[in-house]
Image: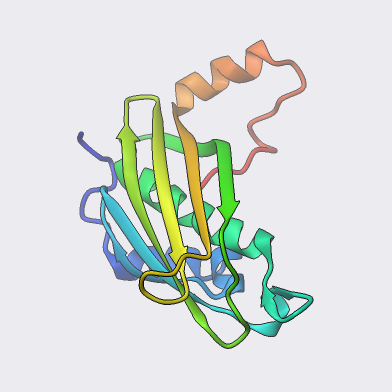
Length: 161
C-alpha cells in the first residue's frame, strides 16, 4: 500500500501529537510504522479513578490513539481518517505510578477501512486491556459528497486526525 505519509519520522509524529490530547495525557511514542505502533503512558493520579487505578477512558483514549497513528501512516495522499468503531475489554488494573505499554498491530489495512488491535500491559505477560478499532479512510472529495448526503453535517465542524 502506498502511503501519502511515507518518510514520516517518529520525531515528527511526536511533534504533531504533543499539543493535542495524546500530549495532554502523556502518551509517548516509542515505535511507529505502517504495521505496528508502540507507545507508553505513565499512570498519573489525574488519569486515575478511585482506588488509584488507570481510568477506563484513559486506557481507551491511549489505545485509540495508537490505532489512529497506524492508520495515519497508511493513508493515501490527500486522505483523512476517523474512528468509526471501537471496542475495549478491561482485563486488569494499572496502578498509579506504573507505566503501561501499548502495542498496536494492523489486523486489516484496506482501501477504505483499516482495523487495528491494541494490547495494553503494565508489565510483560500481564494485560490491562485489549482494544480493536476500525477507521475509515476518506479523501477530501469523498468527504464533500458524504456531507451532501447527510444534511446538517459540515466538514468545517469535523476534526480529523
